[in-house]
Image 1 (cartoon, rainbow, N blue to C red):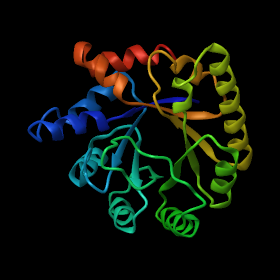
Image 2: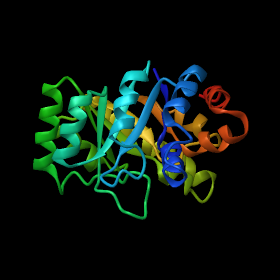
Image 3: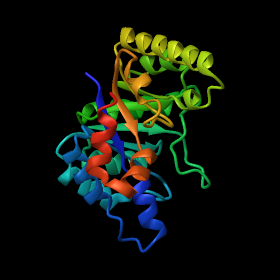
Image 4: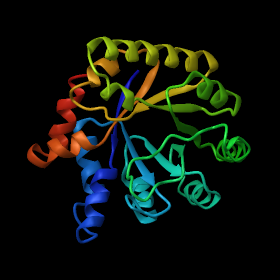
Length: 236
């Protein structure tokens, strides 16, 4: 069954740009859960440009649904998160200073380091996931590294030039989610998903979490987080 997952990072990013206190991502996620959000996603970056250690600890205490924390592949970050015990940890590539969004991890470059991390997470009963590009070779390698889940970056869908290109991308994504399911991995999806394309994304089989961030914040500025979440969930 598909779940709507709210990426809370845009709220934390704006807070950090302003006075460091408001808007409060904890307040935002509480309203989002009231609106029906079934999972909360955040990105603990090395440079703490979005959420920080204190945020993640508070999220773990407050969240009633499900907490998925993305993080850069560093032993320090993984150790910190293992103490917090989110429901899932999603590994992403080392962050770039100029980019807020997480970057897909190239599994071939970091395979030995990744496998050790996956084993550690499993020993702590924390589900492991990895953000990857929509490529069958990456999915197969994720399976060999024994990830519980993958998170597919579907940004390519928003870059489609026309309807035919969009349909081709949706068909390719559908084939990749099927392949991941056959390997035994769950599938989450993210990347420029919003009110204009979430219905098409929700039509793909084997997807569990559909992760949306900025479009919710943009709409929430005028109508509030609770209603913004309710509105997008009617489209799934």
